[in-house]
Image 1 (cartoon, rainbow, N blue to C red):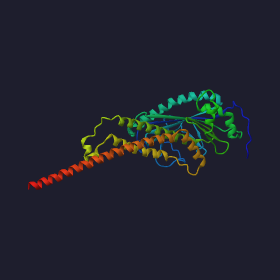
Image 2: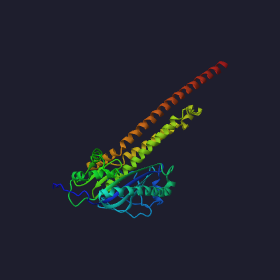
Image 3: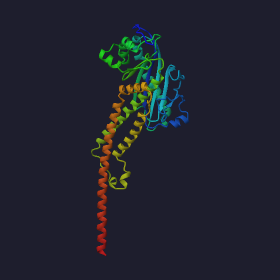
Image 4: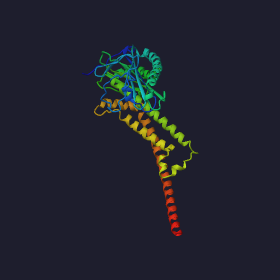
Amino acid sequence: MEMKKTTLDENQSFSGNMLFFYSFDIGDDTDLAAIRCKNILEPFDIPLSTYFKNYRVPYSFLLPGEANPVITGNKGRVEGHGCILSRVYHFGALSFCYQIPFNDSFDNLKSKLIEIKRQCDVKSEADAKLVFNKISPYVKKPRFFNLKNDYFAVQVNTLPEKIVPEDFKDLYGAKIASLLRLEMENLSDYQKDLILESSTGYYGQDLIIIDSKAAFIYDNEYFEPVELFESVTVQLLEFQYFDRLIDQKLEFFYGQQSYKVPLKAYLPLMGQRFDSPISRLANLRVDISVITEQLENTVKMTGDAYYLKFYSMLVEKLYLKDWQDSINRKLNIIRDLHMVYEERMDTIHEEILTIVIIILIAFEAAMAFLR
């Protein structure tokens, strides 16, 4: 049935939820099996979405003092206030999602959103610290915290009127754009159009707008997008952490101009046991390659054009590909450095072996002459 254009009130009140996503890097490998077995954190069973692969699944848990969120409508809606999703990942990351209901106009929501986000910023760190203290014995190289990332979304319940998404954007687009940028004043037309063009929908009555730090959801069913927001936020956190870590390691390596290789490193057999800075870089390259591959393959979107487009837009807006490319370039530098180092050591080993052979031959010749 064709929907008619509807004239809407600019001061219309909407009901919905403010959703705040936070992720923290707290160390290296985390022993999820031990945390689960010893019941360090109270588990919260969430059926795995069909859009996620079922290996290396994060451990979902309930924060102490938080009520159990209720997921209804085949994972469509979430009933609850406060932290509705909390997870710990095997590579040393914590993730939280907070849901705060609202019923207000977009203009009034702006100031409330800024204040509530500030409160959630503080609460997320306190909650992360609480969880970190509980699980730190099961985290390799624990540290609170290496890096933090955040994202937020505004979910609005659909109005009773059947509204064409384009009409909705025409009337409320300026307010939505400034809302997603946490600006009290309306943005320029260029910035507004730039934000609103990254939008998609499924049924013709729903709408999702994705920006680099926030998203807008006009739909009653939103839990699957929430899971994707949470997953991508964690991916971004780890990519940023690895990029910074590689920079630090390379900077340290380049600063070792006066570094001298110990004599045992030149020995053909003993040299393999020598733990050089370039060897540590090579090991780091392997570790990062494994985890980034796991992050890239966490989500599977085959056969669902809508969520494939949604996920692709999210990856583009959060610049995941750019971060990944940056990491790959630096990993290639490490690979090239390691290859040059290995070739140099192989050449030295061959020369040493040649000298040893010459000495042995000379020794045998001398012994034969003396006889």
